[in-house]
Length: 575
Image (cartoon, rainbow, N blue to C red; front, side):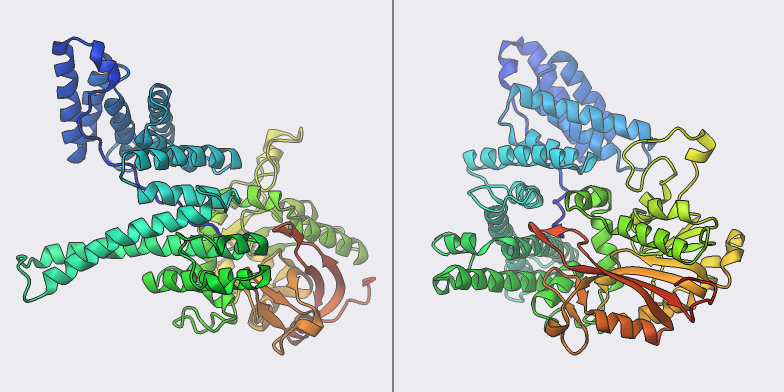
C-alpha cells in the first residue's frame, strides 16, 4: 500500500519563555539566559546558524534545563545539515542529528507534554529510521504534540497530519486519534488556513480593495496557496487510501458519526452499503487530491484504479495501458528505504521464486550457468541475490527509481539485497564483490542494447543480447504488455530465457483486453493474454505455475509465474 509522506516542517521558533527550572536561578544569571535566548532566536531567524548555536550553548551552560534553548538549539543543528556552506561530512551530519535528538529527549524528560519537542523529535526519528518500531515511537510523539495543541486551544494541522501518516502506516485507522480522524482534522484545519490565503489573494487582486496592491506580495501569496494545496493533496490522498482499507463492519460504524467528513452516510444502512459509502468518499478524496495538485501523480493513478480508468490524469494518454514512468518513479522513490522491510512483512517471495525457476531452467537445459542476465525492474536488488550464483558473466539491473538503484548499488555478495548481516566466511575480496555489474535508470519499453553498452566496454559480451531476462513483480505496473515484451525480445540473445511474474485474473473474469487495473493500483493479467502477447514477441512458453506473491490485508494475492524461451528451442536442450 502506498502511504502519504509525513509533512516535513520543524516547529516554529519558540517565543521567549521562562521555564520552571529558571525559578531557582539568580536574576542576574536569568537575565544572561534571556539575552542568549533572544540573540540565538534572532540569529536563527536570519539563518546565522553558527551565531545561533553559540548563543544557545551559552544559554545551556548557564541552565542545562532551559527548554526553549534546548529545542531551538536542536532546530539549529538540523538546519545546519541542509546548508552546503556548513560541513556536510556524513559523520558530522549524523552527529548533529544525534545531538538534536538527545536535546529534545532531555526536554521531554523534563516536560513530558511539550508538544514542540515531541513533534520535532518525531520528525527526526522518522527521518533516521523507517522501521515499524520507529514509526510507533513517532506516532506516540505526534500524539503528545496533538494533545498539547488541544490543551493550548490551538490545534496544529501538521501534528494531526503526521499523526495520521504514522497511524496509517501502522494500520491503525479507527478511534479518536486513529488515521481516519487524524486525516480529517488535519484537512479541516489546513483548509481553513488555505481559505484565508485564497481570500487574501482575491482581496489583493480586486480593483475595489482597500489593501494596497503589491505584485510581489501577490506572487508570494499565490506561492503559499500552491504549497498549501500540495499539502492538502497529500492529505486527501492519504484519507482516500484509508477509506478503501476500512472493513465493511467498521465502515458501518462510521455512518453514525456526526463530526465526520464522510458524505451520504444516511445511505449506509448495512455493511455492504456502508462499504460503498466509504468507497465513494475515497474516490471523492482522491479526486480532490488530483484537483488540488496536478503533480500528484500517485493520486492520479489511484483515482484511475478506483474508477476503472474513467478518471485520472488525462495528460497521460497511456495511463490506462500502463502506470506512467512518473508514477512508478515517485512511488518507489517514496518508500525505497523501507521497501525490503515492508515486503518482508507481507511474506513477499517473488525474487526467491524467480531464482528457483532460473535454477531449474539451467538444469533442464543442460547449462552450467547463464552467460549474462538482465534484471528488468530490479528495484533494491532482491532478485540479484538469487541470480548471482547462476550467472557467470555480467548482471545488469534497470529501474526507473534512482533511489532504488542507489540501494541496489550497495549490494555485495555479503550484504544488502535481502541480507541483514554478513552470513558467510568468504574472503573479503569475494564478499565485497558487487551483485550487479551495471545499473541504469531506463524505461523498459524503450531501452536498447546500445543504451546499456554505451561507455561500458565490459558489457561487450552482451552486444548480441542477454542469456536470461527476469522481471520480478514488474508487470503489475503494465496493463498492455505487448510493447514491453517486444522490446525485451530485442534485448534477448538466441534461445534466451525470460522469467516474470504477474498478478492473476481468472479467464472468466478477465475483460476482453486480458488485463485489468485493480483498486490496489496494480494490474492483473489472464494467462491466455500473457502467453499470446509473449508469442507475438517471439517467445515460447516452457513453464508456468500459480504463485502467491505476497499477502495483502490478510489475504493471499493471486499470481502466476511464466517461463519463456526466445525463438525455437535448441534440439540439444531437454526443454
